[in-house]
Each structure stands twice: as C-alpha cells, then as structure tokens.
Amino acid sequence: MSILQAIILGIIQGLTEFLPVSSSGHLELGKAMFDLHLDGADSLTFDVIVHSGTALSTIVVFRKDIANIIKGLIKFKWNDEWKFAVNVLISMVPAAFIGLLFQDQIEFLFENQILLVGGMLIITGLLLFLADRAKRTERKVKKADAIIIGIAQAIAILPGISRSGSTIAVALVLGVSREKAAKFSFLMVLLPIIGASLLKIKKYIEFPDLEPEINTLTLFLGFIAAFISGYLACRWMVKIVKKGKLIYFSVYCFILGLTAISYSYML
Image (cartoon, rainbow, N blue to C red; front, side, top):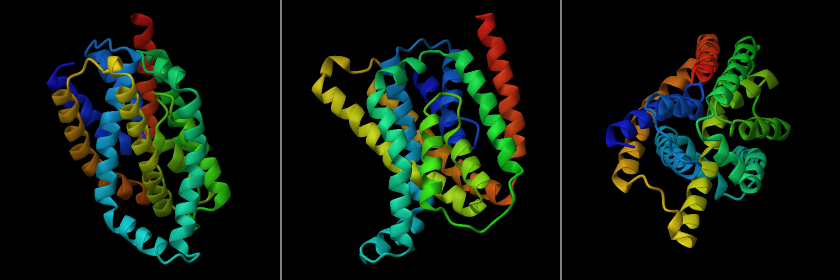
C-alpha cells in the first residue's frame, strides 16, 4: 500500500464512518479499486487504524457532551449521565462478544469479499429507507433500546453494513428522537474502537512476527486523513439526521450495492 492510497482510503473511511453508507464496505471497494490484495490481518489492521482516527474525531466533535457526561458520572448519583453511560455499556456487549469469540472469522470477511459487501450495502439501504419513514419523537434511549441497537452494531461488523446507518436506523424505528439517536450512535462506538485497537497492539506485542507489512508512516497518514475527513463528516451527519434526509443515502447504498455485486461477477 502506497502513502497516496492510504490517504485516499483514510479520507474514504472518515467520510463514510459517519455518513450511513458503510465505511468498511467502502474501504473494501477502495482496496479492490486500487487492486490491493492485503491478507486478512493487514487489511483489518489498516481498518482499525483509520477507525481510530474517526474515533478521535468523534471525541473532538462531542467534546462538550463527553465533558458533561464525565461531570455527571463523578457526582455518583443516578442521573441522566449515568443512565446514558449504562446504556452505552449495554449496547457494547453484543459487539464485544462477537469480536472476541470470532476474531479470525471476522478477519476472513475483510479479504476482498466484494459480493458480500454488495449484498450488505443493499441491506443498509433497506434499513435507511425504513428509518426515513419513521415518525418523529423526542424519546430518549432506554435499556431495551440499547440492547437492540447494540445487536445492530454487532451485525455491522460485516463489511457493507453501515454501523452508523444501522444503529441510527434501528433507534429511529424504535421511536428514539433523531438528535438523541445520532448522539448515542456516535458515542457508543468509542470504547469498542479503542478496545479493538488495544487488542491489536497487545497481539503484536505478544507475537512480533505478526507485525503488518504496511509501514508505520503509511498507517499514520491514513489515520490523519481519517481524522480530518471524519471531523467534517460527523458535524454534517448530525445535521442530516435532524433534518431527516436519509432516503438519499438509501438510494446511494442500493445503487452501490448492485454495482458491487455486478463487479464481483466480472472479476
């Protein structure tokens, strides 16, 4: 992977992490476009690095909300901040369970599975279509909602299923307000991404022979590109969800999914 390719893929990751069109799916399509044949470990390592860049951009965008949550938590009272934090922890359980038990199988899914990506993009388009038709409410996320949204996040491990798209769509269908759905979706992913990065670092420390072939500078520039583009996309996406303009992304996912499926049969 060249530095230019890493930067372009980092920009793709940053833009598509928050826009409901599947960042992992676009990364796989981008690798196919560049004819990059990375093994599962290298591909997943790059994905974790650029996802870390978008996690940092989330922290920057929601820094005030995160600060308020921390202030509420240190009061050690059962307040809105504690309720939010507990719901986030509940939502993490399904993805953590799948990530820890099926890591090797997940790595296989990131090895140029273009047909799979196309099919999952169509499912993302369907979810966004349903979410766009959901009624507007002002309801907060409840514990039962957090479990279901967490399952949606776990399913979004599949390349082509949009994490933000699926979690926001499920929240809206459940009746959560648009603003609260977007905020919950973007903040709930922070700890899983940080955890995945730490697990990857731990693995390389324990097994240095597994170090990826992609050099450090290339990974770093991919990280920076993902951070900058992610910051811009995150701010834009919050506005989009509030206005209820998800149908355009639904159509986009349908078209790209069908294109990816057609392309897979041409390889």
